[in-house]
Length: 137
Image (cartoon, rainbow, N blue to C red; front, side, top):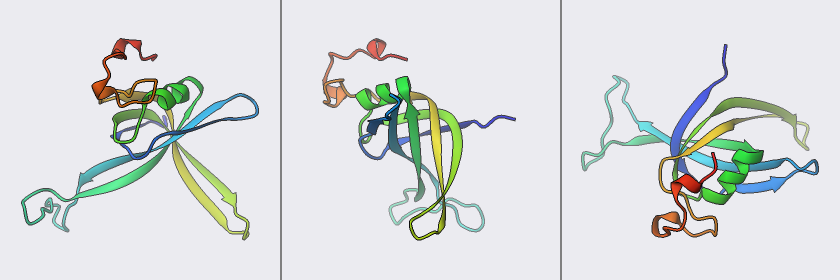
């Protein structure tokens, strides 16, 4: 059996990166995915203007080393990306001795569905200096 997750959605905030004492690069970002909201009969719910109402779910994405470096350099809030990876559950006891649980997606691959930002930090949509062929994958 395989632990495989594929998500496509919008990046919720600028990715946060850090490096461990051992030199491992870790980058985190949030990803929003949406699906149509349905009533008890399975029918899509629409608003007063006839537009679909959507349920949005937020996912914590974790990238290591090369993938993390690329995400840190080229991904920005609002970009559409597809993440391919695996689901990872964690369990810990907090300061108040309460057992907590968490879930994250460990990304093996992040594909840009909209133009990447430039490595200098500007949004890539207006910067022609970064060609898609230059982005390392």
